[in-house]
Length: 490
Image (cartoon, rainbow, N blue to C red; front, side, top):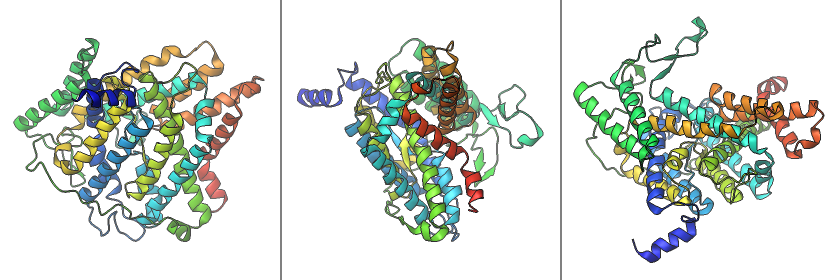
């Protein structure tokens, strides 16, 4: 590489200043991409199969158009992740938010047209951007006690480890939990035994990646993903295992969870981006009424607001970018890009884009700057053309990285003073409820409300930042939005 270009990159992204190298940033960018590339396949499955009130699926017609949604998903993720790298200059990648996309599909689009639903997402992003520009969102970020921020990071670590175990099929949901008090089980049988070659591939990948991490091997996470993918391709070629689900129906509980790891028949295809711009900004207000539409925007806003905040804190701490007092450089730029990404996701008709916890995989690989995000973003843009290749890596090969990163984030728990119950109990609730409710927002909300409640009852109300009173009150509304809607007859 040209020395002058290298010098510019170093200065612009603070690479040497943050103790990193261009090689580390590139490896980290690749690692993050491979751990979250699944969204290009998964987002179409979530939002592409749900019919709106007119009985049309996203993109028009009654037949799901997965390639259309996949191309738009990759395009939005690529552009926005590059924007985060260039303006935020941190190793945070962006893509369609899981959970938010399901809420948009099942909770919003069924009440109106898909264009109207995406219009609400755009409105939500605009509102959050205004909160950033007015300084409110940054102020809330800085008002959170440092130990609660640590708890958020630890909770997210457990959360992404759980995601890794579930997506790999190592831990399974119980289909009919009404007949048992146990909500999850080990493996397909739930009797303490693991079955299926894909699960074995995951276990091998986890052990090998853990060994490489323990040996402090450079490129450990990325090598783990690539090596496990090669193993998966060989296993599939020999065993002809096939998928767990085909055409929406379960066919083999011991099959591959998401992608069947085999080389595609074609490696290149031109993307169709006609889905971009298919939104109606205020159409929902005429469909369901102003109050109902505003409540939906509020629900989206609160979830997006704190999911991102939790991820930024968690990944930022892992990267060593959060100061001892809990503040972080360029917070305003980071949150502004994230806010605009929510609106851009709606404008691209792929649901709100948000910062991904899987960015921690790149940080675990050594990424410390926005250059890693630029690499990840470029890979997403390339994924539009090489969509078949993004489907080669199965969940079982990518998820060992999530479990290992979960461990790395969990190690921060030593920074919480568990002898001080005023902070320890809220921290505990934050940590356990993030994975147990499968929601970053729920865990943060419970922690904030409990923190304010305990402090106030113990006569330490003056120690509570005024903004935390506001945030706690908003979370009370968030948790009781359904009773409020019932009370208003909505």
